[in-house]
Amino acid sequence: MVVDIETSEGFDCEQAFGSGHFQNHLTLFTAFSVLVVISHAVAFTLISAEVDHWCRQPTGGYLSADAWRNISIPVDPDGRHSKCMVYANPGDPNDTKVIECDAWDFDLERGKGSVISEWKLVCSRRSLKTLADVVFMAGSVVFLLLSGHFADRVGRLPVVLASASILTVATLGTCFAPSYPAYLVTRFLISGCTVSLNAVTGIILAECSSCARRSTLLSLSFLLGNLLADTYTRFLKWVRPSHWFYHQLAIVAPTLLVPVWSLLATESPRWLIASRRLEAAARVMRAAAQRNGSNTDGVDLLLQRVKRRLEAEIGADGATPLATDMVRVVRRRARSCSGLHFAPPPPFAR
Image 1 (cartoon, rainbow, N blue to C red):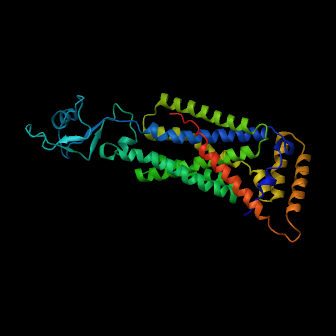
Image 2 (image 1 turned 180 degrees about the vertical axis):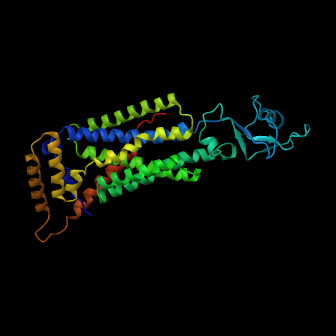
Image 3 (image 1 turned 30 degrees about the vertical axis):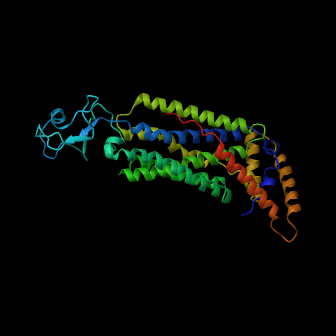
């Protein structure tokens, strides 16, 4: 689909439907999406606290935990019992050969419990813990590329609704994942959907804001979102739920409000005009003008100007836009991608 970027950016939202409650709602929605992104980004860190562990004694063993460690677990140079090694023949005091164990016991009384003990992410399996971060970052990259493409093809709003739906289901999946691979799959989907939701809501806010307030509203939304996320994560660290399941559920609780917020979202009028869906753009802008308490005459004047511009570009035979329009679109996207690549990432609360 060929879009007319020049026409869609040839007006200021202040002149069309004013500024007010409409933009304020989009600002809060974008801030909320930042909160959701950060809460999921730090979720695994909060639920993967280290838990003391040691090699498990063979099945049928009768020794207490302390007696087993004193007899069978070698002592490291730091004076502590090894967490990953065990004597090959614990019953022979003259045999000091050690081997790496593949089963462990965890101190769940002193520790609060975490996914480390749930899925045995220790010793030879410790690299699986790092894999969770790799999968999360991979989901962000893949979905961000896809969401940008589909946001241009089918619209901003469908991407928001799809991301919100998948995100809600995947979030519940993280809490009830039966295995670590299943948990990683849900993390991949969550990462992709959160960054897609955040990116596209930010685009909608930018495209619905006046030129004078655009930077201010975007900065405010990211600042507010980071502030909320930092406050919320600090609160959870202070509360420290008794089990990682409840901790995970508390961390991702804001995500359960995403479907409600997404139903209140709107399509970008600039995208509708760029796609030459003028009637749909008129409905969105009139609704925005009413929410802002502005006169809808500005919408009518804008659409008349856009129609004259389109009539001048498209001949009476209905020819498609000139190839120069496509060149402008490609150049604009190239500049956008370059800006996105070099833009500093938002700080994540840890």
